[in-house]
Length: 122
Image 1 (tube, rainbow, N blue to C red):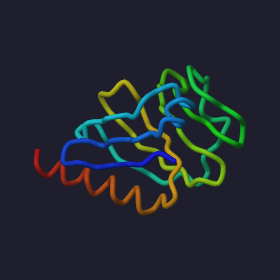
Image 2 (cartoon, rainbow, N blue to C red):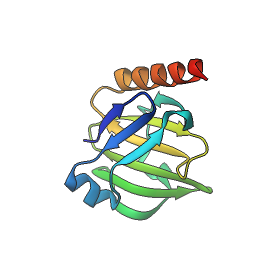
Image 3 (cartoon, rainbow, N blue to C red):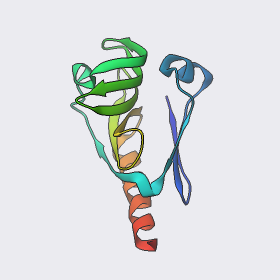
Image 4 (cartoon, rainbow, N blue to C red):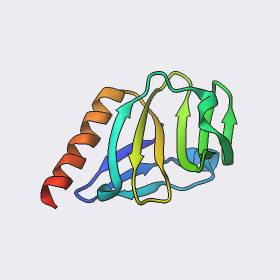
């Protein structure tokens, strides 16, 4: 499962060697100034991701990599039985990050608090 790290200026999505291989992409570093917010998405639909380009997709098992839908480019890494969060971005190569986590409520609260602190400083 990807590990999310928040620094004063960045959101870092750490991928293990195997996760990076499945996603065909290394870990991600996103400036917090480009993070609009995070939401829990318990209704995440496997079919709503769009076209896989490149990555791994075994329906209802794993979705990892870049997915294109309606002109949006999203990075996805989630597995069956994971709670999914959606992190909306602005001014980045990705429109959103869709990440499977253990505790969606805690992760979204942590990300949204970091985004709020970043906005207060600017």
